[in-house]
Image (cartoon, rainbow, N blue to C red):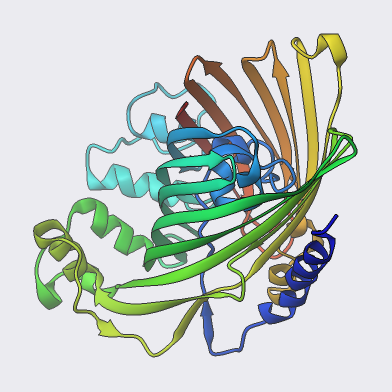
Length: 405
């Protein structure tokens, strides 16, 4: 029990730093580093209390203290919008009789424009992440990269706004077991996360020009009407997990502790892309006077693993719930629904996983299968774009493949 006072002090620090989450009006806020994971998306985005393995690198570092370690290599692409509509517009599927979407294909600019105009009402885009990491036995170490493009709005094209964001992060942290008994297990973890970020606000016309491969130089390049912001930062994450009676779980995660400030430079987007293709990453951009920050994000969760006894090899369910980013919900005056994430995972025959969840009021679902060292997971998800549940939602589909050793 000699760690008791330390535990209380650290927990108090987590809550005290919440007062630092409100930023001044001059700050430009950016989205957090949050690679998509089909495993988490299928469970409504809830994972803090039950975080484990590779996903702990971007959710809760307390899981670094796991007594078992694993090395994971993961690839996870995703798309926004209805995958069926995308495949039909791409000419990969025949449209069914009740299909009301665009009938032209991507063979020319007209077909692509028709699809984007149709999909922009609910949002379109896609992305992918990949990474390699070791998690467990007191250590979390990984390299994680993620790129996300999303746009939505109406009318098309003038009312469509979006973004392109790419992150490349090294994650290194430690996890400690403070209490380990039959009654409870308390773990604590923290990490440092040096990150390079590229961010560009986009319009529908910019996206069309990017897809068309605009490459004229200087002021003749329409992509130079947009800006690419590039910068780096050092983020700090911390978390704790508590297990009672080996079945009841609690978790607390503080991401971007004390807020994460990026040292940004800016470039004309077209010139930036041209230089990237010819000579690597540009390094002589103009400095930015504004302060670009990722605000601190606090998440708290609870979970319960049902003990099925001798039947656990047939059916092994876990349910969990999370309240995420209360400071952001208050800052952006969002509905309380924005706080809520809930999920469940049921293992069937120990190699099949069935998942479902509730993400800010919207249902999510997915499944996974484990084949020796290979994990394959899929997820269908929906996320809220407005301030209130039901304002404007975007659906998506993610596919995940992982090698775990």
